[in-house]
Each structure stands twice: as C-alpha cells, then as structure tokens.
Image 1 (cartoon, rainbow, N blue to C red):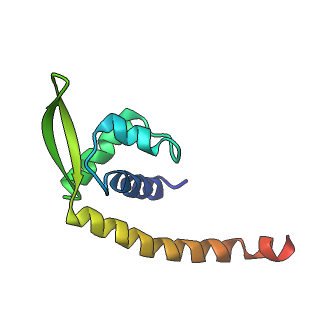
Image 2: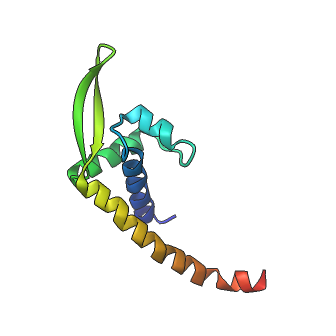
Image 3: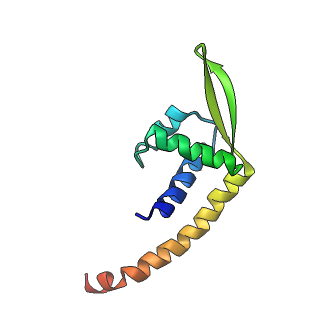
Length: 106
C-alpha cells in the first residue's frame, strides 16, 4: 500500500479510536488490534502528528502512581473523520472502476 495512503488511514483509525472517549497509548493499540496491527512506535508518531495538526489534545493524569497521557479528539479531528467518510466514497468508486473487468469475468 502506498505509504501516504497508509499514513492517512492510520490517522483516521487513531482518531476513530478516541472519538467516543479519551484514551491512552496502550488502550488505543488494544482497541485497534482486531482491525489493524499497530506498533507503539508507529502509534506515538501518529499521535504526535495529530497533535501538531490540532486534531487531538493531550492531557497528563496520574494513574496507579504513574503519569499517563490521555488523548482527546478535537473538532478538527472530528472534521477529519467526516472528510474521510466522503473521501472513502471516491476510493470505493475508483476500486469499482479498477476491478470492473474482474467482476464482469467472474
């Protein structure tokens, strides 16, 4: 898969993982695991990119005697998810075009 496309998909997946409630790194990975494998290093790169783009906010809170970073989706993040849904319609149309011969011959 094209690296730029994969990057965009990972961004939206992480945003979707925190859409309904704030979360932290380990839990995000756990929540995404049934759908996509994601390493910690990749996740934290995505989280930093999303924070820089103001699609999420980060707050630190104590949990079990340790500090834990919690990630919250912002309006920009919610807007990105909605934009992705529209973009996906176009991607599906392109997929249908590319695979049309297979569908006709299958």
